[in-house]
Length: 230
Ligand code: NI
Ligand code: MN
Image (cartoon, rainbow, N blue to C red):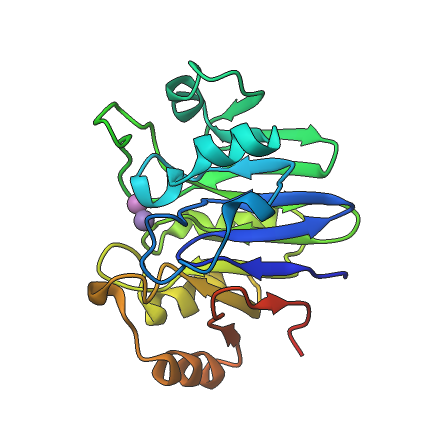
């Protein structure tokens, strides 16, 4: 497993695999604690958007225009972006597509989704991405759901997962630890924490709780690169 995962704050990650740069939920300019991140340097090949909320759509339009990145999201989120000249792949829950970097499957999330202008934003989702190098799950914003148990039954064994952990709007750390058990994955990266005061978390409590369940939790710092879980 070759890992190259860069955290860019909130739910935004830049993950490189097989020579492709995959960017997730690029909420950067509006993120008060990510001001050192320069969106011009990201240059992704693909931008994945889990749902329509502003803290996930974020700077998608600007980054896609700068980079020519293709966009992967729900069908309705792609429709909302369709006045732009982007190449897009609109999925719905349970669907998968094979692209040049590997497979992507959109999986269930339990949350809400409206676009920044109030347009209907379709069901929110998560993504599982895999190729012959790695397999991972990114939850998007969600509660703990039984559907997570379907993931290990339907995709290659996960090397790691990115789970929301900030509570209030999404899972908190106790539910995220149960999610790790549901998806049968010990290597977890937390996201959707600390961005704003209401989702600030006690890092040591969360890390210790995961440790007590024989799970590994990384709570990355902005611009931190993760290339191992050992
Ligand atoms: Ni949301
Ligand atoms: Mn959110």
